Length: 139
Image (cartoon, rainbow, N blue to C red):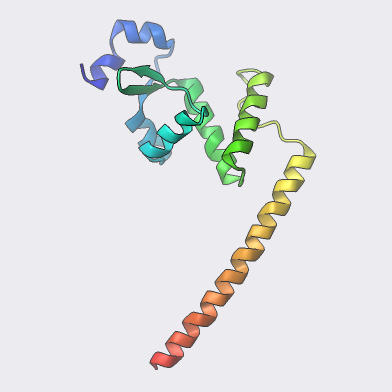
């Protein structure tokens, strides 16, 4: 049975408790992440798709978790930190849908990102200098 047929089978829908189930491929395209990344997040325990044979299906709760993972990555948190944030969010209740960041965490992450930006600015400046030397040498 293919994934589409499995998704619409009465047994699957009863197990899933969600009419909005997506396959791993659909989630990959929708959120712009690779299949490998989704499997890695599952391996790390960040996502828990419903498994039917070799197929993975994602319900609304898993899609929200993926959105939070991607937001955490965008904010520069490590996967370990994201795991902790997701656990804290889960304790707050299923309707929270956002990270519970305190002032200390926000300030720490801001410092970390500012340090990374300074390092990136320095690397960019060095590469521009090297590029300019290459252009001058070629001329």
